[in-house]
Image (tube, rainbow, N blue to C red; front, side, top):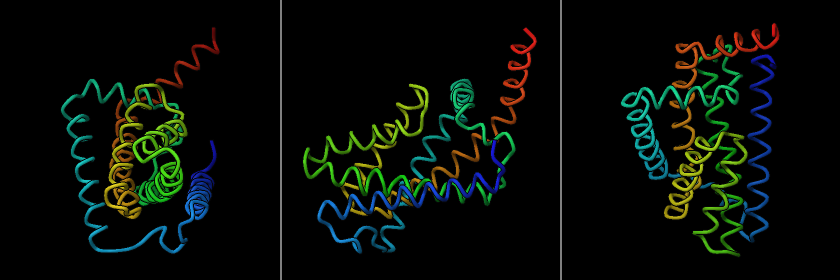
Amino acid sequence: MPSRATLLLLLTGQTLFFAAIGLGLWVISGRAAPSFVTFGIDQLAHGALLAGVLVAVAAAVYYGLPKVSEYLVRTQAKNFAFLEKPLPFPAIVWVSLGAGIGEEALFRGGVQTLAADYVGMPLAIAIAAALFAVVHFARPLIAAIIFAIGVVFGCVFWITGSLLTVMLAHALYDVFALWYVQKEMHRLRVFADADGARAEETSD
């Protein structure tokens, strides 16, 4: 497992890479680079509102259905192995910002926009959401949830035309999700259980 500094550097590089590809696809589609991301108070407000809705739904599931929450947390243990050494909150915010900016730039700003020119927006939303789920290398149930969230982001981007809105919503939601998953993984001793299981396999 890379050090925390190396991990954050790699994730920052991934953000820049995703954003560059997204911008490239946007330009290839015939749109002007300066219009890729526009800024406005209304866009920020819409992003914060969407994030609030997503966090409220997630919190209702996590806290209202503890068995489901535990299953979802344990299911993601392998993908979140980098949380074995807890990230401080500023690092969680940094990782979440990177995910929100890079992934939305690529999948909504790039893939969805270009695909819509050829197959129509509904199918383009589905294609972008499917790729969004695939790159997370998640198990089927988690992938289905990620796909659904991707569809939501895709529809909001379609309706608002604002990449900033979905970037902000994605980032703010990820702050909550990453904070919660990290907290629960350590409370449930997910990493300790995994280490114990590996030790037993080795001894056998």
